[in-house]
Structure formats: structure tokens, C-alpha cells
Length: 209
Length: 209
Image (cartoon, rainbow over all chains, first blue to last red; front, side, top):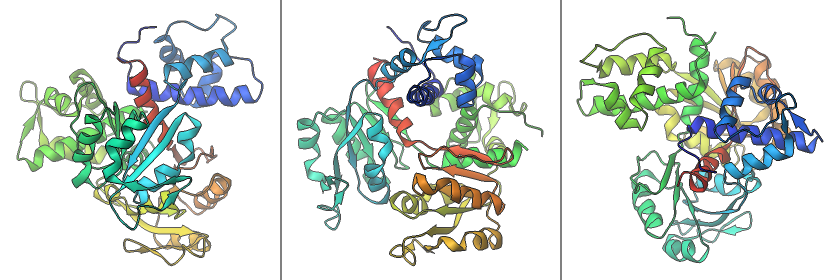
């Protein structure tokens, strides 16, 4: 199945649909319509159909979708039918919170290494992971076949850490630092700005009422 | 200016545009085209024009947009031309990280109160805020005119805390807990699932190459 450029918003909705389908499956529901998915996820049913259409028809007119079939399909599309090894660089408050975040493992993202430079933090445990010194970055990335790097270091260190990860073979970077990072074209970069979430609220508070 | 239902993805892009315009303004740039904004933010120029069109014409054909004018306009649209008082409930790793997150203050979100139930955490300082006991929720929300509540408590406590915030007058809830929350129609709820960010990466790793 060849997939062309898909809007990021679509990918994020597919993720939401997959969670809803998982819930339905656990409840023993066997078939679902785009309308049900729409109601269950707060998206218009036209949008649901449009999103799923990117990946070809896999519903049956009148009957709708087989829950388990569609779920497995979305999981494959999202690349969640396998496990991804993840390194977190920076074990401050945010890095620690991310290392302990339950949601990652549930979706197949395995935090295998957490690094920091602070002697007081190195050696401490986050769940069952021990924070190790930043010097081990290249060694850990190689031996643990890490594909995704999470940047939770201060802005001043973000680009250097990113360069080291990319140079060692990391293919995707999730950046929580405020620094705008440069990566080669073939590397996937995603910047997370947590304040955007509050801005969606303030927008709605200011205008949608 | 009356604004109708705007897609959330648009609001998030407006936020990105506003940051880019702010950067241009600091660099002394006075006018910008939708193409420049597109290049600078990695969005198609058609999308930029479409997003801005929701809020009426404020560019000049051929000349483009006045940077400061467009910036101020977007800031107003995003509800960032004022300060919002925010309460964070839960001062574990994530709650603490959020309380210390610089990005919020920069965009006018003022964390005025952080509450927790853990005696070991209550009384500790996060920046210049002291963590206070959960019992003070109603009192603090009222006296500090808090409109936004951030839920950083375990799933088991999330709904009860949300109910107390809403009952006391909080108008918007940012939920970092995995629990699906119920709020009255007039309250704005946004669920943040950090793993979605990793799923956008895994999707791109699995399919867009």
C-alpha cells in the first residue's frame, strides 16, 4: 500500500479513531459505521470517511467497518504494528515525566534509554530505567537499535544533542525544547510546543462563545 | 469580529504563524507574503491564505501583510492579548514540568496555583510557586479568578478534580490524564495525549519513505 503525503491532522485523527476502535473491541462490538466513529470521537462522519479514504476502501456499504479489521488496519498505518525503541535525552522534570508516561508503552514506544549530564540525576531510577550519562548516547543508540530520539534538554544543548542522535542513525526526533532544530531531509522532526494546547483553549474562550 | 467554528488544526497553525511573525518582527522585517509565512513555517501558501481568510482580508494584494499588524491580529484571535490565570492540579513529574514550563508565561498563561495531595510535595517550590494542598482548590480558583485548569493527576482522580474546577467556575480544562473526562457543554475541554506526537513520527517512519 503506497501512501502519499497525508495531512498531519489526519494522522492524529487516525490515532484517535484507533483508540476508539480498541475500546469498542474490548466492549465486544463487532461492526461500526463512520457515523458511530464520528459520534464516538467528536469528528464529522464526512471527515471520518475522508480520512479513511486516504488508505483505500475497507468498509462495506450499509454494513460499515469490521471493528477488529479497521483497528488492525489503522495500527499498521500508524506504524504501531511493531515496537519502536526510544531514547530520551534530558532527565529533568519534563524528561522524567516523559520517561514515566504510561501512554507511550501502550502504543508500542519503548523507552530504552534516558540520558542526562547532571551527576545528581545520573544513576537515579525512572520506573525500571536508570538515568545514564550523556557520553553513552552513541553507544546506546547503536546497541539498542534506537530509531526515535526525544529532546528534553535545555534549548542551548538541543541542536548538539540532535546532531549526535542523527549522526548515530536516529531517524525521527521529537523536540520538546523551545529551540528550532535543523535536521537532514530524511529525518522526521516534530516540535512539541505544549503552550499550543493552552492556546486552543484561549482561542475558544475568546471567540467561540 | 464574529468567528464561526474554526478547525482546531487551523488554530494550531495560527499559533505557529504568530510565533514566526514575532521572530520576523524582532529581525526588523516589516512586510511578509503568505509565501514567506509558508516557507518559514513549513505550511503550503494556499493553506496559509485559507487559514487567514477565516478571519477576513488583512493583506494587501502584491504587498502582502504588515508583520506587526498581522501578528497583533493573530494574537487577538488566539485570545493572547490578555493574561489567563491557570491552575495546575497534580504536582507529580508532569505537573511540575508543566508548572516550570517557560513557554506558557511567554504566551500569557500565568500559572498562579499548583495543588497536590502528597504531604511530601505540598510546600515544595516550583519556580516561585509553592505547591499547596488540594483542599484549597475552590478558594484559589475564586480569589485568583482562574479560568483554565490543567489536570495532571492520576486517572482515578481526574474526573472528581475536573468536577470541582468546573463547579467553581473554571471555563476550560486541559487534560493530561489518560482518563476520558465529562464536562458541561459550555466548558472547553482539550485532551493532551503525548503519545500521539510519537505516532505522527512512527507513521512517517513506516509510510512516508
